Image (cartoon, helix red, strand yellow):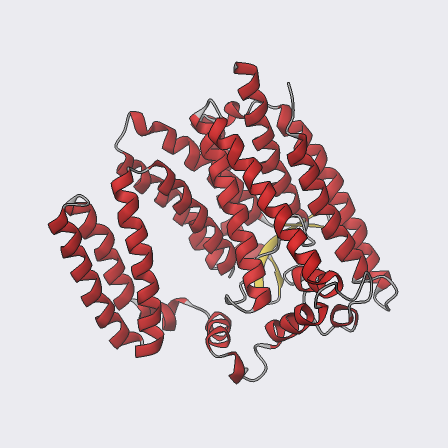
Length: 415
């Protein structure tokens, strides 16, 4: 049995970058005493996570491909998400953590991995059941925890979950339907532009007209089944007309503020765009080679908020510059390539789907985090995997990557 040691080395390098960045934000500053505690905790999380990684990698991942295993775990974590709304630890006006023995645990991070496993199992049934029925079932299974996570509120994690669900669905559906989904995605972009350039109500009407035209075009050309075209594009129409309700009654005030700051950063909205502004200052000041280890002023002087978690990328870019950032991107790209290579060579469809789900999860998390640090996406509070400080995401990311190694090992056993 041979592990993918290149994948492991890449993981270690990413964690080393994260730990180095975390140390650099506290070394030589007045916050060293408090910051040292954060570093020590992160080091413990890494050790525990790596232990779990090796244990899971030798564990047969196919043991989890049973409803009697997945369903109880899913229900327990779902119950913990519901309990958060009543008993969760509130930090920055959000209840995302449960305090157990002095350790903050974030159930939504556990639910990410569980949803990937549950959806992978559901989609392996496609040879016996209608693929669209399975997609609908998986949507229900995914959207229930997403609802409670959104109520914490944690829109970023909700987006990540819906994102990797969509990627897994995209992988298992017929080719002709993939064409429709690509078209629908483009149309949703048109919806967003219309809503904010023309106003919510007018934009919804314009979008509806565009969608109906496209639906008729696809039906006439017989590119997709008529019923499926009507259902998917009809749902897009409802989204267009329901935007006013979503904006006024579903999104919280802080979420509307973040979107408005993203759309009009110069207005600042009474300094509500301070975090992103300081992040862009930190990244820009890093220039080509950065200010050097321990010399980042934005984080040291506490101008850069959440520089150990949500904005760890900005803290890293300030100290190591464009060269460091490009190195980081190469490491992430290599990580995704190794996971997808395992997915393509897996002899078990369940293993393939697990790898697809994990790769899409990591890609979405990286894109959202880097995007909000650069100010090209709204700030959502999604940490940078293997880099940002945090125990739950570190542990679950390493467990997930351990499952990728398990898929590879058991492929070699079978071959």
